Length: 150
Image 1 (cartoon, rainbow, N blue to C red):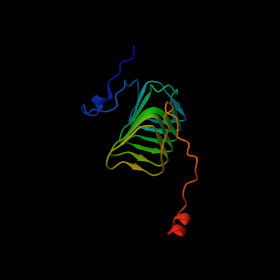
Image 2: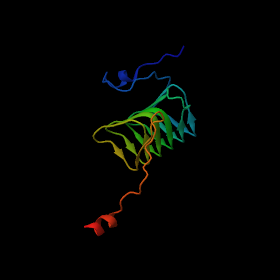
Image 3: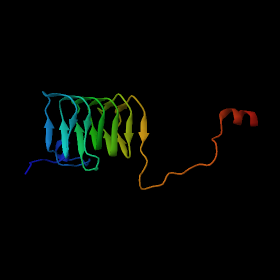
Image 4: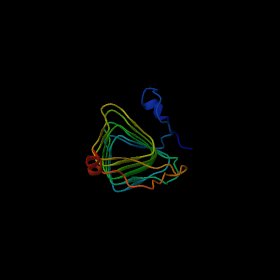
């Protein structure tokens, strides 16, 4: 059986997303190539490649303040306090801590962002698959239409 620990232990017991960590990439480690994992992954080092998990919503990535990822990230639940150079896709929840730096777009269903976190790209909210999207049957008003009516 894998010995793991709770993420709340890493952050002084402050209430955050919690998950068991089954894999750890240490601060002196660089992984070159795409990385697929299941369960919980904590990164203190560097990954040069895409990071993905199976799409069942039960996996979590934690990127520490000194950790970096150069590639796209596709994980259901993410806590970022380091740097990502690529697009981030959090199908469930993403927490951007104070030292988070994202150089790419962040696609999320639910987001928490601390003061000091940076996103150098777009924030794109993912639709709720259990909630039907509203279909508007009219054209949006254009700025020139408003000017001509006044």
